[in-house]
Length: 336
Ligand SMILES: Nc1ncnc2[nH]cnc12
Ligand SMILES: [Zn+2]
Image 1 (tube, rainbow, N blue to C red):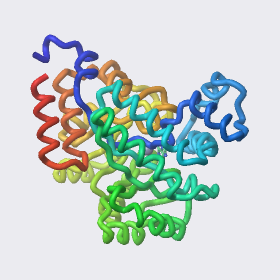
Image 2 (cartoon, rainbow, N blue to C red):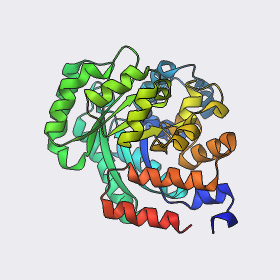
Image 3 (cartoon, rainbow, N blue to C red):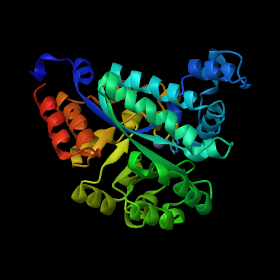
């Protein structure tokens, strides 16, 4: 049946899991303006056009500065609910049936917003998304790696009352200069509490960051990981262990990790047998959600329909859902 579908039809119809999306990165300018207004908080933009013009990044840090500033208007539980609900609506439109979402509590607690205010708003939206749209989700708490180990330990402590509804911990923010080793002890404690672990590594950082994430943080997945391709031994290990990489093509282009989508290594890694997946990272900032990312690589790299299906299968295999649920979605993909 695949031959009768164009790649774009297939991309749309495939059930997909998203494994690398920052909820703060789904904050669309329209919603940012609405929440800023109701909370009477000034933002440094007059119009939506101004906001969009500011989204011209030359590297990760130039993006992070703007991303953290945008999150400043999120204050009340309802704000966090509205943010997450808007993202679930995008999932529904793109046939993302399962999503594992990062949230950055320190971005909010550092401004005096309680962990509970943030998480309860987000979590309620995920309960409603399951009830009203059938979309399943997990939450992953990310530590900001530019902050201290102490701050990460304090954040882990604040998460404990919500432990049953947070599947794992991750590591994001400014990579170079903040290696995984800085958080080895925090991750050990998180694992002892039963959290799964993931970490951004090999986005801007060299392969040593990926080795550390594997060996010191004992991660279940690597977020980005595209620079792993510079190290043959590392590639062999990723393939042998079927260690997933949550790759974010439009993010890599916008943050100049690649200069042109035609240079992206996701197709090569897929064909080498790496468990690569497609994700949107910060879709409100990088110009597209899940299907936009699929279409961008399909066009730039001439993916076959079998490549596209394999990426969707990988997304479920790499997810934290039960094996039965994985099989359910994978057989649906096979039937397309
Ligand atoms: N792509 C990215 N890398 C590191 N930290 C992030 N926080 C949000 N998006 C990120
Ligand atoms: Zn990310």
